[in-house]
Length: 254
Image 1 (cartoon, rainbow, N blue to C red):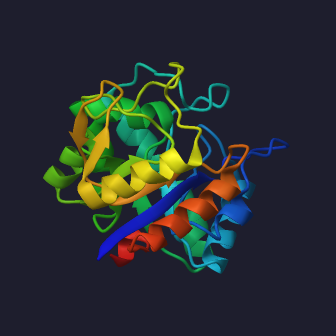
Image 2 (image 1 turned 180 degrees about the vertical axis):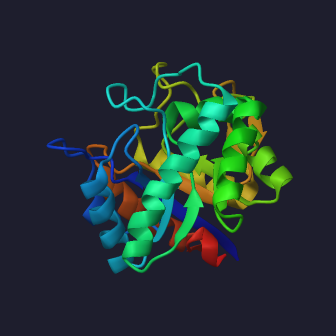
Image 3 (image 1 turned 60 degrees about the horizontal axis):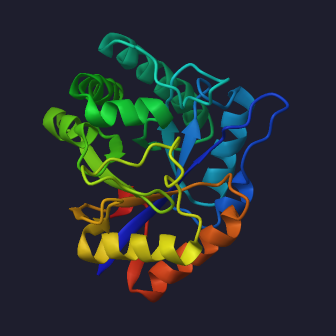
């Protein structure tokens, strides 16, 4: 049987600013990537999101990003591997405190936004992130773009890795995601998104924007909880995965 983890970025509200529909989306996902205060989130959001995830039996992961609240962590920054290491250790530690305080465990680490994309193609950054995760806890699972330098670095240092695919993003023929600044970066049609995910799981392939099939490993799929139709999409994708014989289960239970 095919198995797939559904993960979602959450806990990204901060201060008076509310982002996403965390409480509702947790009914449909199996893993939650909780923002750790750099690109989004704050102590109160972290505590509340952890509590909700534990209540609903959703696995918890740290979602470290670049220190860029204004740009939501989606703008590239010229950071060194050493800076990346420090940022990731710091942010995992922040989330770990909230999870431990509430009697839970941290399952995984998934870098956010520009940090994720930069490390996907830059081995030095990827290795620094993998080392940060390993040094905090070698039992943590490192999420990374399928076929990316993050996956290679995680495997090389001895971490368990989870190859991630995206439901609502288009791909380039080198396996990278189409940059968000391009008009064709997002898939807005729910049926197209679901069909893409099912094919990635069952066939290990995704059709690139260049019309070429790209080989892909799908251990976990990311859905976004802040879109206009996020809840309807989350419900639809989970139902369709089940209908296609794909078991939806947290990566730590696979």
